[in-house]
Amino acid sequence: MKQGRLVLTCIFFAMLHWACSKADEVKCPPGFGLCGPSCVSLVDDASNCGACGHACGTGQACSAGSCRLDCFASLRAPIRDRWGTAWDSLERPPATLANATAACTAIGGRLPTATEIHRVAWGGGNADVGQSYQVNDLWTLVPRDRANQFTVKMSNGAASANATGSALAYRCLCPAASPATFSAAACNGPPGQECFALTGPNAGYNMDAQDRAALTLGGAMWECGFARAQLPRFLAYAEAILEGLPNGTLNWLHTSDLVRYDSTSVVRWKDTQPSWSASANSSYDVDTAQYAFRCTGRAAAPTVPAVGPVDAFVGVTGVAADSSERAAAGWASSFDDCWAAGGHLPYSSEVGALIQQGLGNGTKTVSWTAEQEGYNGVQFLAGYVAWGNDPGGTDVRFGEFHPDFVSWAYRIDAGYGHRCVYYPVDPKYVPPADTVCAGGCDAFPLSGSSGAKLWMDKQDRAQATLISAIGICRGIGAHLATERDYTETIRKGLGNGSSAFLHAVDLSRGEFAPLMSMIVHWSNVDRAYDDQWTTYSTWEALDDVRPYRCMWTNEIR
Image (tube, rainbow, N blue to C red):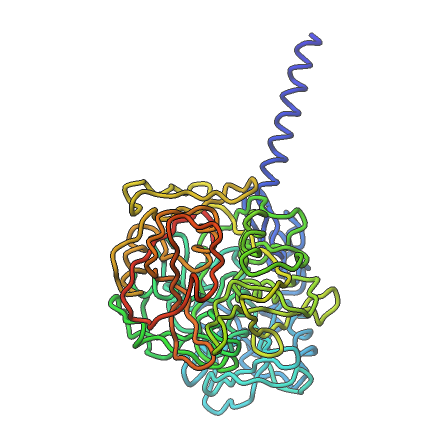
């Protein structure tokens, strides 16, 4: 009898250990809780308001994690747009941003984003809510910088910026519960067709089916983060356009690539354009210029294995980052340091978005990023970020523009601090077969227990233009390798370096040149590779023909 009880006790504790370990495997984005098997918004889900299973009563709605009076009944002459969002059809009296935010929160609503006003405005939108005579600047949720907020007119959908202490009109809206994914109405597009589902190496991701409001780079990053998505890099746009991304307007759109200390790259296309030229459809402008943009994000709920430090900061898309600055290191050593920790040196927009979401302990000093920013007549440079102006070293109104937030530094400099980013890992990912990779597949597992891994072609592929190379890699489930991919894997023993310069899908422009793309080379196996000019890297015109290599990964980036 005692033996039977012992067996049952062991089974019980084994099951308890299994349940705890399974719970540890999943982390939800900020504001979401793991209620059963799913990440659920505890901020605005009336069935799980503030905590799993805490349901609001009849006539109540969930706002900011608390049950309040139903928002719709508190709107001023409520009206619904074609996406089902309820709005004030009448403006509220002028107020500061803080007071307007508080007033909307008090009724269980919120201020709209810039795009939410833009798409229901009279000019440029569908006029669901706006009228031509409504010319007042209305507050939005989107910050421009530490002192200014974006505002949008209902008469034309155009965004500008005003000081947060100004007294301006505003409207509240009552949104549906926030999804834990970038899907349905979280995307921007026609009702029922808001998202464009990506395929190939981006399967499981959505992209907006239509352009969003014209904002600065930092504003675009913030709005994508609010939608639990990210602003696409040039590579992501190129892959999506080659897949048939719809509704191209030939208007320039922001990418998240900083190509100089003060410039960002922009792209365009017309309608659906599967044949696309980089030089004719890529350009740049200052990082404070306002352009439309699209967001991209995961269509499925994020499940984030425990990667990186225990105290890592986890952003809204499931990407994590070191909670504090790492010791100063040289350019190439910073890549090694992050790889050894199970992560990667981040791109500027990656760490910038995490700063906007609350990444703390900023030191207001140079923090390396993997951003390639060209040549200034002396040497090639990399982008850096600096933040920490708020309590706790945060900087949630981070604007991603020079000189307040970002700049550049020589890649030959002795060393700077940095953060590492850690991506979720797809447990169902199927590695590429050796027959798919050029010369077979060379596998590179990251350090740590996450199971994150990269695969690279063992040999160079035949010469092609940059866009053709992107398309060929995409067609076999891979991405064209970036300079970060090359730096990480060459230093880990990627072989068969042919000494020929290879495409790296990183755009830059430097001090004097037009928009260019980076190229790298090495011989045989060269673990001393450090990505420095002139030994290992330089740049080329966007439509030059080069060999290249493809990269596969099981990371959800």
